[in-house]
Length: 296
Image (cartoon, rainbow, N blue to C red; front, side, top):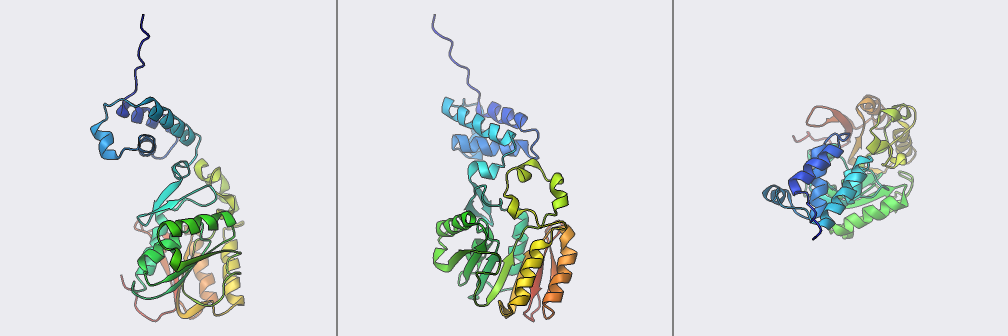
């Protein structure tokens, strides 16, 4: 008697099965679809058109392995090794934070305050994957960007991303503690330092707490330690930002009020404004030394 042939799952069945295994995710169906695309190397349109087509054995094995990783809490970006930010692709590893769409409001805030055709010098403190400084360089195409991070592994990734995006000839990256490696003044300084309070640790989802680099998340009892360190460095070394420069910080909602006060105390000549995302959530501050009206 001939052996019975294996009944393979269809693409549609695999998608539904994957979503069912990812119930602890906030977006199980989306995660399953992304992982199925990665396993099969086909796009959403083809997934829909071929939903009744059977999975090959290698694709089914790959998909089940990817779903198992996600089911253990590993973020999709780390599983795939990449994440899109500002419509640009970035290589991502567990050495760096995963770029968040929320951080795009920092880029939008800068674009609202500076013309794209200016040849600006830009500094990113805590560069991580390089997503912020690379996004800025993609918009300010006459500009030059510098990224600083305490992690040598992160700087390697940031440099690699800049090279992949064709930005390495307009950028430099260095390992160091915030402003310590910096020489000269910059037109734009952007920073997304750790700002989660130690007391909020238990409230974080597993995919953040167990997988993203702790050194890039937590900043003391109130989440303000790194803001204090950065602003103290500015106070100790005047002239790191041009007289008509722009300083932009990302911040958590709980830190925005106190950070605004701290920045005003450090830079009394600056016009300090709160940055909000599209939902109205406060997500940072902009300290503008240029006496021009913000362009909305």
